[in-house]
Length: 101
Image (cartoon, rainbow, N blue to C red; front, side, top):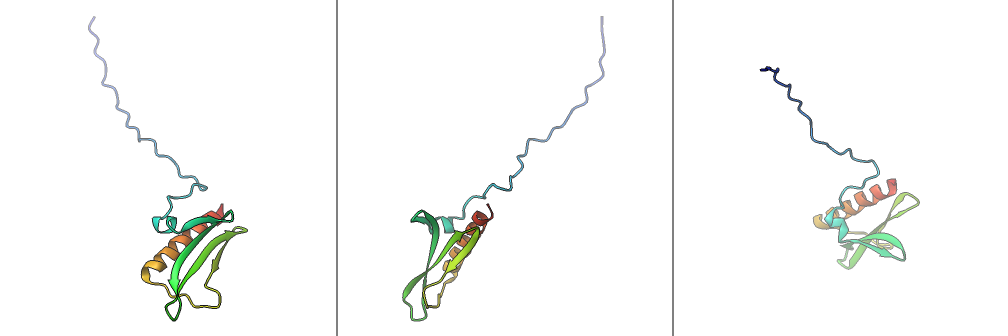
């Protein structure tokens, strides 16, 4: 018996694309990762900078009570180069994501 079957319709399926979770934190920025450390059990980022008379200082970023805290040099002005500003931006972005958790 010779049966002729109709050609099968091809079904095109999209590959599975995972849905990003709101709580998933994106990959850390390498500029912030090199600044990040734990001090007394508290995660802090320290960005090196200078003051108005070119002394070495730092700006500190930390998360406390779901808020980002930015601490400048005590009684000083922080002068940042473009690279240091990029590091500060990366640290602030990472801290903000951590504060949202």
